[in-house]
Amino acid sequence: MRIAVDAMGGDYAPVETVAGVAEAAKEDNTLELILVGDKEIVEKELDKYGSFQNISIHGSSQVIEMGEEPASAVRKKRDASIVVATNLVKTGEADAVVSAGSTGAQMASALLGLGRIKGIHRPAIATLFPTLKGVTLVLDVGANTATKPLNLLQYAEMGHVYMEKIVGIPNPKVGLLNIGQEETKGNELTKEAYQLLSESALNFVGNIEARYITSGEADVIVCDGFVGNVVLKFAEGLAASLFSLLKEELTSSLRGKLGGALALPAFKAVKGKLDPDEYGGAPLLGVNGVSIICHGSSKAKAIKNAVRVAKKCVELNFVQTIAETISFESGKENSDG
Figure 1 (cartoon, rainbow, N blue to C red):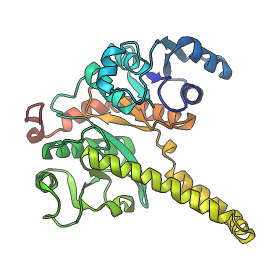
Figure 2 (figure 1 turned 120 degrees about the vertical axis):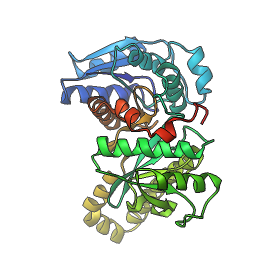
Figure 3 (figure 1 turned 90 degrees about the horizontal axis):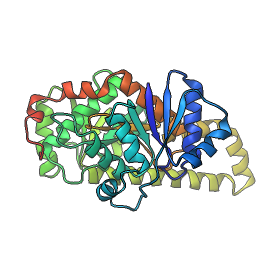
Figure 4 (figure 1 turned 135 degrees about the vertical axis):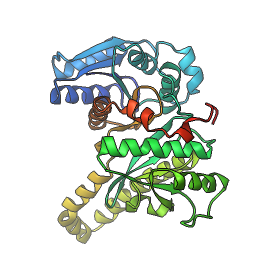
C-alpha cells in the first residue's frame, strides 16, 4: 500500500513529519511511504534514521503557508507539497495522502484534484473528541460555514460509516448539536435537519447540547462548520488551560508536589486520553479519495498514527462504502445543495 505524506506541511515539518514516517515504516513493512517535499531537506532529515526500503522521496519545490488563501494558492502553486501529494493519489501512484499542513489547502487540493464522491454536495472535516465512554466524531469542524439541512444529513451518514468501519462502533448513535434537547429548539437549519435525521435510517438520538459532547451520549455529532470550528478551538484551549493551571497548583507548594507525585500515574493516563496524537488524523469526508487531515501541531506520534488511519481507510474501501451509503433523498439534490 502506497501512502503519500506531505513532508512540508505542519508546524513541526519536516522534522516531526519525517520522524513519524520513519516510525511507521519500521512498524509496518507492508507500507510504501512517499515523502513529498524539498528533496534535499527531506533527505537530510531521513538520513538521521538510517536506510529504508519502503520510504521514497518525491520532490516538490513549493509550500502553501497557513496564511495563504487556499483555493488561490493551490491554483498558483502547482508544485506545492500538498498539491503534488494529492495528485499522486489522483494518478494512482499513491492510495492515500496525509498532511498536517493548511487544512484549507488540503481541502482545496482534494476538491480540485480528486473531486467529490458522487452524490456528496459538500465535504466535511471530522475530528475525534475524547469522551467518558471513548470517542465521539464531530463534523463539520471547518469545511463549510454556510450549510443546508441536507448537508447535515450527509455529514451524519458519512460519520456513521467512519465510526462503524474505522473506529469499530456498530450502529453508532448520531446526535445533532443544538442549544437545547427539545425538538423545537434551535434555528431553521437545526429544526429542518432534525426532521431529516429523524426520518432517516440512522440511529438518531436527537439534539445534543455542547456540554454533553464529551459525555459519550452520541458517537457522531453533526453541526455546521462555523459552530464546529468554534467548539474545536474552545475545547483545545480549555484542555491546555486546565493542564497549565493544574501544573501550576501542584508545583506551588511542598504539599502540592507530594500530592502530584502520588497522582502522577492518573494524570498521565488522563493526558493520554486527551492527546490528539493518539488518533493521528481523520479523513476529509466526501472527497473521492483518502485524504487524511492532521492537526497543524502534529508531531511524530500523530503522523505515524495518521498513516495507520490512512491504511485502514484504504483497506476497508472507505470511499466506496460512503458512496454506497448516501441515501437517495440526500443524494438527489444538485451539487449546490
